[in-house]
Amino acid sequence: DAVAALVYLKRAYDLRNAFMLEPGQRIELGDLLEALIGVGELDEAGAVLATWEPRARAVDRAWALAILARCRGLFLAAHGDLEGAFERFDSALSEHARSPDPFHHARTLLALGRTQRRAKKRGVARTTLEDALGRFERLGAPLWAEQTRAELARFLPKAAALGNPVDMIASAGAEEYGRTLATVLADPAIDAALVIHVTPPLTDPHDVLEETARVAAGWEKPVLAVMMANE
Image (cartoon, rainbow, N blue to C red; front, side, top):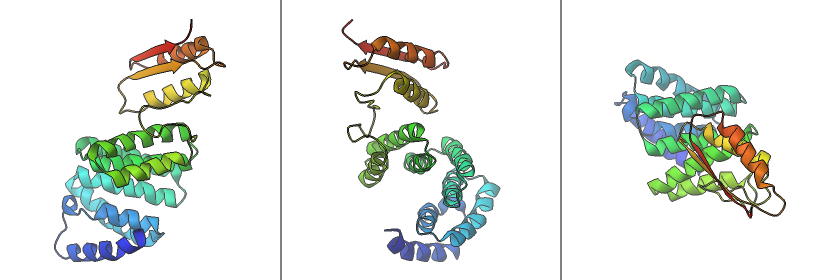
């Protein structure tokens, strides 16, 4: 409940402002900013960002820069600037690479996936959200994992799996396999792909194999295809 949480987050923020100016020690910033944006208090969120972004840059605190970039992305998305939001999410992921924090990395992927879904980029949103879900599950963060499953369920078919591996379901044809493979390979967190095709009655496995080979040829990442057909 963002509204209820803000009472305590704002109090913590005000108290720590009196003695703690080190961005890397302000663990409440991400929660505060996401709650402010979530309830529509954008002016206050903008003021907090304007205060702490230059401070984090001045001392080059990658951990804080990652969180602030994620929140700036959410802030821009709330204002309807989706392209600007994607740029800030990319910056956040770059900062996460400099300062590993698996929990906040997963939160950034969740925020990115939600924004991709809002931008109608459903294929890449699915990949991003499934990555976030896997990270939350490995971290033992069930509440965050449930948020991610709920986000996936908003646009996936009811029969589709909501975690890794990507479940294409029986109705998928060559085009869907190709688009999904391209989306997966475009993810910088993915090193290789395994395509397993169990042929339903109305799908030609040769078409799926040809499309898989065509997409794989455009990438240096290894792709292994297993065609479980009758031929």
